[in-house]
Length: 106
Image 1 (spheres, one colour):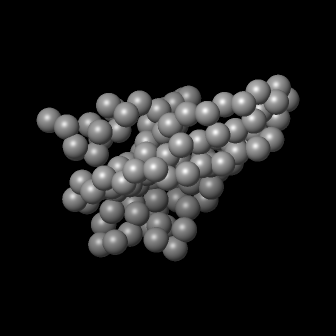
Image 2 (cartoon, rainbow, N blue to C red):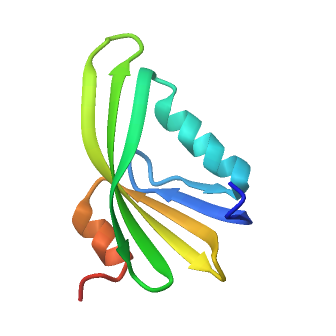
């Protein structure tokens, strides 16, 4: 988190369109996302430079705490940078939305 601005904004489209503030807010968003999993892992698979933004495609896998059901899928995070510091993270389940947010489509 040393590359994150103290006033970092984290926004997730799904499941609730919620915005989190600060480094602690990012950790709250992450905890909220993974707390229902007994196991969870995530791997970055693709990076796209968009000037002051970077789009990263992640593959995530988890196993439900209660159901033990396996869940797997992709998510995209658009990192907004200012002077080498992350000022905003936008999390998407939809690639087209992420590409638009990263300004990689016209």
